[in-house]
Image (tube, rainbow, N blue to C red):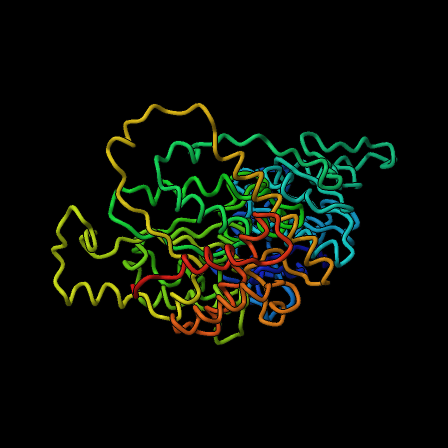
Length: 528
């Protein structure tokens, strides 16, 4: 009987922790114990491990009179999930001297099925990044996770179909005891693959199929212009108007005009979705768009739980959070958006500590002007009671209104306009090209000013005077308008940032009067 140690890992928040898997075998009645704050999923590993070891051609731990103690260290971190199965299995086989290999600088991840096959796990990308920083050279994991893991360079990634493949690759001890020259054993990895990904130029960006082009949306030129400005500067936008005027369709088309992600953004966003278990493909190469229903709970939007997990505001990081029927969301949910809209992150506090998740997204809010949708309509009568209208408008507080840069009306379209012949000309590629040029201008400006921000919406108050470049005439008009509109300091600065984006789209070095006037048009005309 002996002792063995292997290494595994798990995610904690949006990071990862390396976990030491230690096993001690001793004589006695059969027992299999896992210590180190395991949850139910980890506790059940002893049954998965026993069956997979047996079905991989070795004696099951349950077939011997021995006491097996598995320690997952450090013991003060709660262990969750099935990712330790492979490490526990290999540690047991090492301790029982069924196999022999050097476990140093090797990390093992994966859930085992009863027949020994490896199942895909969540949170691989941050684990690989942590393993690399801790000096590990090789990582063994399910083949379905290999492409995602290989985004991290300078570390060897092995994707395996089953436990037997890993054993045959690592084991330097012959199964046949009569074998006298282990060095002559041909060590194969069967279907397992060693994958290496070179720099970002090796990632293939497939041509996306545009499901909705801006040209398909009849009229609504003001809304389209507003969305273009929002995409160029990363500004939050709210669209209001009667039902059926195209608000949802505009929001869906918005995702196709956003500029492509950089390699660092791809890594960050892929890592978040990997941890959350929402990674449909191996890599996210396009800005994500999240569209939760208005009945979604507070925790699902913000994030949280016993061990805090990312919510919709974090899953939308680097992309778009589309909230349709905005006033219908719970008041608590709407008010919670204050922090991410202002700071670009969300803090979740629990008894054991505070987790801060990134939440830098573009908010698109769509709403009707009243519960029936006809308030202010020239053709239809509003049937809402005054108290219902007041309650509806009060769902969105002043601080939230202040944090939304643009308020755009999406009005009813004439039927003649709707019946016009479809145009073969696509608007989205042209709009996207203008947005990319504006983003490039911003990038160069911020690099010159040595500011680590990407869009105009991220500018702070101290940047306004140094970077915005507002000419005297435009400043005079802004100050006069601010007094008449009784703008808050936040709204004042947001108008300047919005005007800076409009100037960038106009390829203007300074903010001029037309840019300020257009930015002022997007302030809310009334309280909602």
